[in-house]
Length: 161
Image (tube, rainbow, N blue to C red; front, side, top):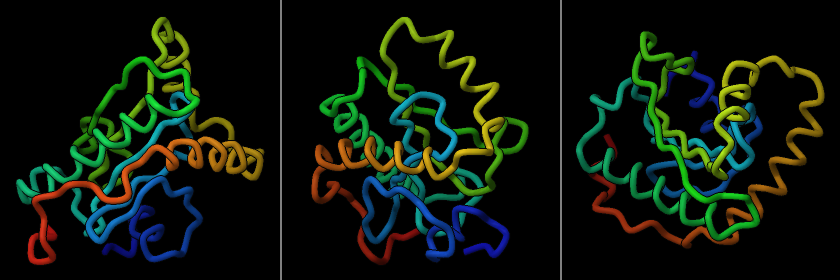
């Protein structure tokens, strides 16, 4: 883990997070600055900056977890008709946190203008974080209710990276 990485600080328990799913390899949690309600981030527990640094098994595990999150979003109370899955891999690809993370972004259809507005303004609201966390906790509870208890994975403890 990196001492300069906000996601590693979350994994150490030093920063609050609204968890949707956790296993020995990965963590899925609510984005504090969501582009749309229900925006979830999926990260490996080991620090890697690029998806190219992950083993094929770990990449597969992250996408399996992302797919499970997407199913849970669709079954939850969110207005979710589809999802965007994306990874910004590297600073030139707009990666702000230097730790691999998969965005699972629920979409409701005809919401492109809202998603674009959220994308450009999502970091502007630094006030009201406590209220934001309460809203995230309610959405996370709904998504978590629909998550499987365990994600089918090809990983074993020896396959972390």
